[in-house]
Length: 327
DNA sequence: AAACGACTCAACCGCAACAGG
DNA sequence: ACCTGTTGCGGTTGAGTCGTT
Image (tube, rainbow, N blue to C red; front, side, top):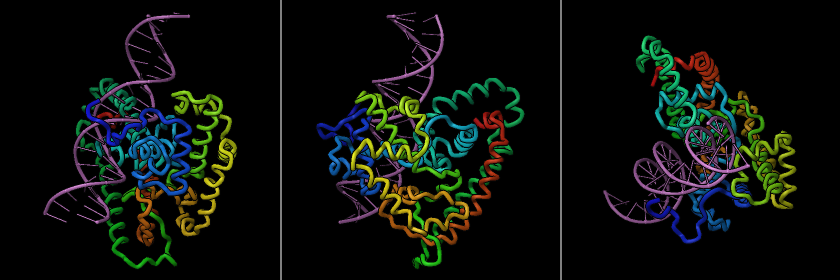
């Protein structure tokens, strides 16, 4: 492969991550928060380049990542968003907070592309009648909604940022990770962090049962191995068990952070903005410290929340055939 | 049971955008 | 305004897995 990678230091490791490396990375991020990736390899001793660390974190270790099969709703969301936004996977992923852009991209390339192709060739005639143009009714509706969303978000954000006075005493504050990222609560994830703890615990369990084996961390094998450990506490317990003294702090850290009452007040529709969310939701800019007065954003989020419910209904009610015609 | 091809998905690469000096 | 370092994003690759013959 062409030129040497970004970190062309000798001894930079490539290829699949081992559970040990994952643990090191996670514990480092637990201590320092995500970000400043450049310093991660140096400070952790990981023989990985910063990019690799960031990718591993964002695509695999980050809390709240949902793995496994995409639901029909997610599928439809992706199809429609792809039609609207093109291959802007990061933007699409921001509407599916539990999925990574990489996941979505992979899913699109491996499943949806084919599916749509099939549908298109299968119902060729009908499609050309009904939804031949990108200006179809359904798409138009969606586009308008999306544009409105984005507009609202931008407007609210810029207004909020322009207000220098952080009236955080009587208004809710929260950290923004994405200009128009969806409110985390929308997916009713009461245990996003738990899922991360599970991730790690699964890694460890798998690792302990199958000591260092190149593909041991692959999601499939890991998931099938630990299906019985379904509760987050199980995950946490086994996780700290496996790393004596190493990860208790990992969890206590989060719980200690959870007493930041400010997050809870978003809870009108955000009851499950869990500690891990508050800890990691600003992962892309950990030191941003944008304690933005929430009033307007909150309003938007709330408005948006209800709007989104409708959006999703709309989406779900749209048939795949409809969207196939968009391509 | 072995060989082969198709498929999946984690990880890599290169470029663009951004931030700080 | 320019330069340099860092981060984010999208396209692509290839090792591992699965299914078929």
